[in-house]
Length: 360
Image (cartoon, rainbow, N blue to C red; front, side):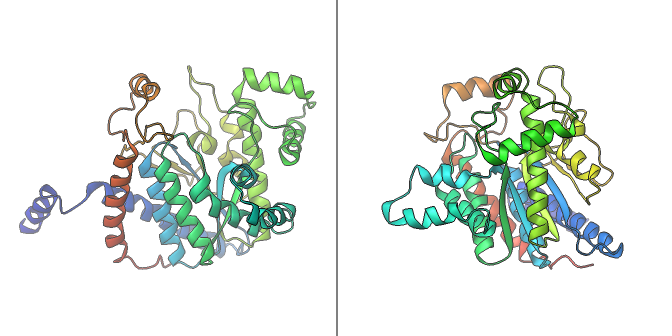
């Protein structure tokens, strides 16, 4: 009983950070499950087949970003060949740098873009490097910067390769049909459904009235491009960071449904690819169920809900917090998000120092 009372005393006096312990525990469980399944695939003689791990996050949830960073830190200790796909447009580099490029760097930038399809590794490495400073987000600004910096540093050290895997969108609903790769994915998607590809204007009108179409096409694009890149790079484990609805889809009587059978989890499974979906924040209603899926429903509810252009809570977000019941535990300023990230990361780093590499 003495040890138990000592534990409660440390807890009461703040010597044990519950959030840090919770996030790191979930990250460790995720990494170990991934390594166990990787070993299972190897025993089946599929050593050269990548294991695909779509990780569904809430883009406002700070704890989800931290889970992903520490899951990758643990996986790096296993010295596997890692690829990390991101739910970001494949041309994000042109979008970010095109607005900010200096004259002296113009030639280097042009060379990267011109050789995008010949040297995808260099192009995506530049994309994640510039994203650490130039990426514009609507929420969780510092969490995005934090994970981009980690990924960029890890790529420089040779621990992983980053890949921007998404199609290009004009808005949240409308895909950019003038983008070559996006246009190809649109035609492929309709062909797989046994449907005729609509004229551009008709397709745009369909996407305006039914957001599910654009999401389904984006899922197809992310699945296809990540598969191709992973095979080219001889990846052993390919992580795909994306929104929760992309991983398993969902059904909802109010929100627009995201077809579970066209989710990333379903696409990998139907293609006969080894896959291990991870749902952060719990399963969404009606999502595609995979027999090996991991569900972390108990991560800290710590959202960053402020205007990223000012670093403060806007009136719009105040209403958003009320109507969506997101105000509990929300960070309403950039400063509050930074303090939380710094505190929890420091505690997790101390605990990580005691961890050995995953071994089987």
